[in-house]
Length: 213
Ligand SMILES: CC(C)(COP(=O)(O)OP(=O)(O)OC[C@H]1O[C@@H](n2cnc3c(N)ncnc32)[C@H](O)[C@@H]1OP(=O)(O)O)[C@@H](O)C(=O)NCCC(=O)NCCS
Image (cartoon, rainbow, N blue to C red; front, top):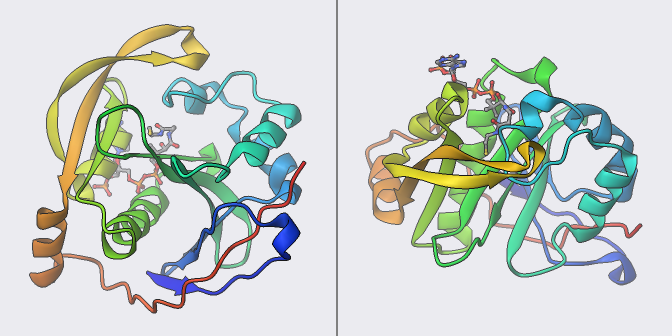
């Protein structure tokens, strides 16, 4: 993972969010111009029903609200996932939900599933959370009916801790979710053993921009 500079006019700046670069992806803060693309990608029941907070149907106004609120508080960090060519393909982030360790979440537009993009993006966010933010642990979750998400977490080193019932907004109901946790120590050992995927970290951190609605 590479941290790249990105600056913005002070008037548009919210929480400082770096740009993370992986082999194939750029992770950056969303901006207002992304709303149409985010709405088009996220308006799919298969995405909404596997995430806690994405509504369905998901329209332009939902994307605008999401972008307006993203990175507005210290409680969460929101990235959009884009290809190196600049095309937005999904989103990911870290949020503090109650007493648990910060929770990692992610989604991709359906045309981009099955190409390893989620694992690549999640690894970059994990490196950022432990390497730059100094977190001690991260939590993750996958509906028990969502083996792809479970696999992403396992590939990234998360360990299963149990099952909980979580409210899924798009279902307007609760559903069982496999819970996972990744300790900083485990992440560090994997890196020392060379199990991490060889990302380079150039710590030139800068504030990323977020245009307001
Ligand atoms: C979950 C999601 C992000 C995965 O994205 P992705 O880019 O396809 O994931 P990756 O390609 O990095 O990894 C998926 C892994 O799951 C595996 N997988 C996919 N479908 C599977 C299935 N039905 N059963 C078992 N494994 C499966 C893939 O083979 C791959 O593992 P591998 O690399 O060992 O072969 C994507 O499906 C998505 O956006 N789903 C809707 C939202 C969601 O579930 N978010 C997660 C909750 S926070």
